[in-house]
Length: 346
Image: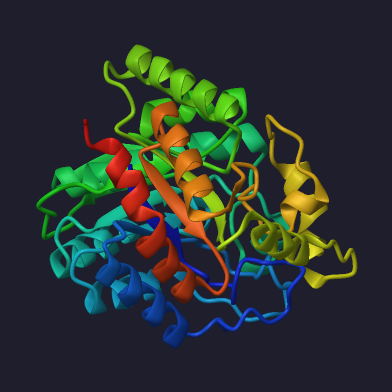
């Protein structure tokens, strides 16, 4: 399993805590990225939302692709997995951006193709927001054009949502970026198995994760002839010296405040997403169901649970924590050795 992290582009992860000490600024992202790179974290996911769904839509947030270029420039090893929503981008233009970034940092870029869920954001920014299942058709076409133009020049394509006519994208990347995507509906999982080679999950129980890993592998074997290459899972991690300290921190961050600006997106998220599990307001307080894996406790307890998720098929753990940079230090110092030691045969 590789350890990764989720970039705090919203000024943090918590809907119930207004100030997490990591404002939505480049200085924050740079500190987190350089810390992760130094400590040996493998991948940073940079989410793409034009409105802030953690702190409220009037709060500041940062744009994903500008950050990607900057993070790649100030790190040496860190892979950047950048989210991209097909309804907000032209695929050939996105391919040109990917081509340039691949020249800047060969082999250190991955994509997280997100079908999108936020109708209000699409309205404000002019994004295309078709019906739920159609958003996955749009995503499939988008990936076909992006990868097609990165492989072949000139490239022609005519689909329902996108077209390309003699499109030339140069230089070609040395390696194509891994394509992650996430979705839980029947239509979403079937589409993703065809157009993505890696699956991104919100946090889940061990049983939920085992089921998704087996399901996506079976679908991709049937459609493409090979299993998924990677399975990423988001998780909010709390490591403390005692279990009691960890539980006190958990209670602090999940005490629900329904008047918090970040809850404005809760009902819209659940309404526009075909989720396969119910999401409580308490779980939603950190987003991406990050509390569901229960990576909360002492270093030994958290490491034991991480090992169980590795055995369930998770290959990339995308960590959220607050404040992120010092927690990354703690996790690397206290949890990494316990997980790695257990992976070495006696």
